[in-house]
Image (cartoon, one colour):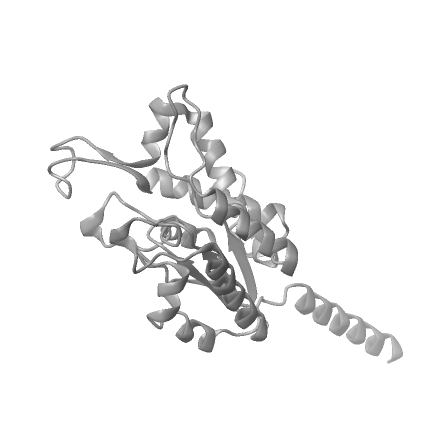
Length: 256
């Protein structure tokens, strides 16, 4: 009788151990906030894609990606237009907020005065996003603004976000926030591809090449499908390298 009882007890313990090892992860949301280089685009804009579009497909069923990025938005207008508050209100423990701004904050041209944000205010706004994310026990992740395609006469890729990317790096150090230096990583990729091939990342079309752009387009800021996927992969690689908990939720390729 004792042998039977001990056997049943052992089986029960093994079942409990197996359950605890294979306990399903809680479902979480990953919010993306930022500008047109991140946002979701409708088919009428194809082949333009923000890197947030392919990014969403790299995660398992425990992750829901909420792409709230919007073209033309700076940290200031994202706040003033009421785009941040609903996110802050919806955050739950374990969620993430990936924040990539800078393209529009740095736009000093007169026609962009409504979105321009000086660096001190840019810092203040990012710190607000961070503190309110942490208050909900969610994880903020800073991202430097992704590079544009600008080469000098010698074929060297040029930095175009110097002050704003540096501000992001400084905040990350000061507040100990995970930071993905997408500006640097994407600039390295553009340099590696060179002037002749880097354009394959961007929305560059000849007249008549695509019905959505009958006159053609030469856009050195926004990505095509290939470019968006390459940028998303840079972000994913950093998530893995920094060993964020989110890395455990990236779909693992099974060997063939």
